[in-house]
Length: 292
Image (tube, rainbow, N blue to C red; front, top):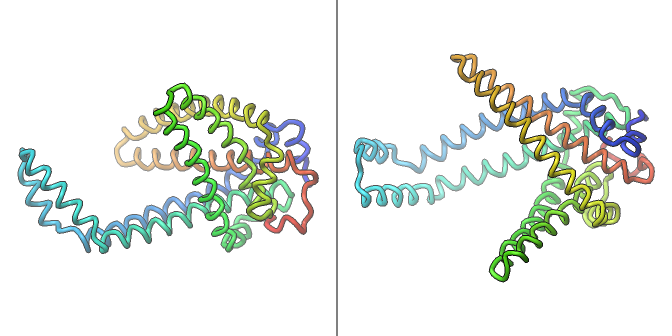
């Protein structure tokens, strides 16, 4: 193995940076595949849904009136709502949502196995990782991700609902919910990288991310968010400047945004995989880490 695991245990951020530098390009290639597939499929399904359920003459007639009355506006909204509530519109949109959910999970799964492969010094090429990424494990990742999201949303819903009792109580519960979310930080890496089952993934995360560590990581995440907001603002300004260039500007702006998204994905997966190995007793044996 490389020295990554020692770095994760002794100098975590240096380890994350070292892994990210090695993996971001492969993650970018997969992100490009995901991004353009999403655009193409999204456009096709939207076209099918609109053409089969929405009467374009209805829009032509209403758009011809530049100053509609309030009653006409309400009628337009009602008629439009009736159109998009039809099975002809909803079924393609539901299918599209499921496809995008699977594609998004595949993209993250690819990033995880790419990062783990680098940590374990497998030196796999992009094609090998791509073939490995088309796995039933994607659907397991969807399952545990949905479960995590439900738990996290419930925590925040409880915090928000407590505002009816006391705003101070709501604020305290909101902070508690944020810190509690940090305790779930190792669930997905334990599940994907460590090959733990559902219950063991949660047990692993809760055992290693104590309340004290969760509070520390919550503070770090706030600082990271502030840095990310600053970087995003700079990227946004640069993208806006590129957009002023006719024709070519839009292409440059899109590529900049794609590159930034891929780098952030590489950083996030490196952090999560790094945290897993930071608290793992070993690295774990080959028998318990099937996804290299």
